[in-house]
Image 1 (cartoon, one colour):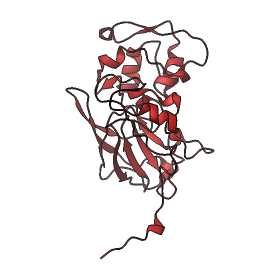
Image 2 (cartoon, rainbow, N blue to C red; image 1 turned 90 degrees about the vertical axis):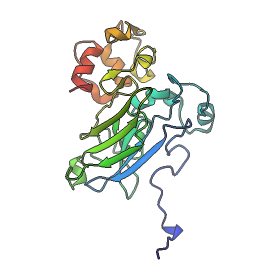
Image 3 (cartoon, helix red, strand yellow; image 1 turned 135 degrees about the vertical axis):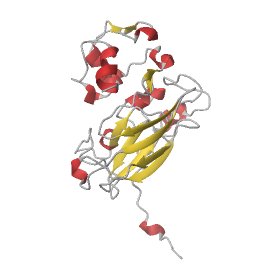
Image 4 (cartoon, rainbow, N blue to C red; image 1 turned 135 degrees about the horizontal axis):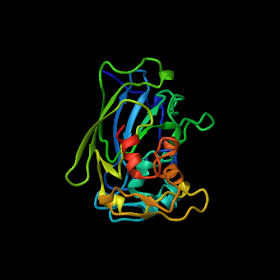
Length: 256
């Protein structure tokens, strides 16, 4: 027989209304927990967006965005719909890596901020996930030292939109799994057709992007691609893109 002393409870994530995993729709929410080979705690979290269509932000049927904004559960910059998966300043659509003693991000995480160890970006290990409700550590992978930044290879099952279901492996930090612009190696035409650009991508007036059709791989014209990627695909990708098209991004980053 085992007993639990409530006084020993330790809240690692969600100690306040602004510190938890935002549940903003009826699905695409919390997923699974596993311990890495190094003892760090790995958690999966969906994009918290609508499963009923192309959600790029704002109040949608079956969702609670207006309430979440009013209550401070999310901030206006996080009102991105499925594009939360591409924004490292929210926990949504991510694989998280935490210190199991404190709930802080681990210093060897790719975007760790020493002065803000509980920030979203400090806790993010990988991005670009839709609804990774199941994860598992692949045996025999990883390093036992948390400072090495190698908790092991994480296999995930990500619920797809429409006809897709995705199984993948995250075996390095800062991997971008592509959602909502990609499902597997194929573009998602519905999200490519939107004009969603995160405000952080526009540090100065570089104009609005004008797009070709999805069939043409969405070459972007009239906008500094490096600035666009800064917000849309996360800061770690700066300096790793090619000469100005999403074709380069596809080949060099998402399809290494």
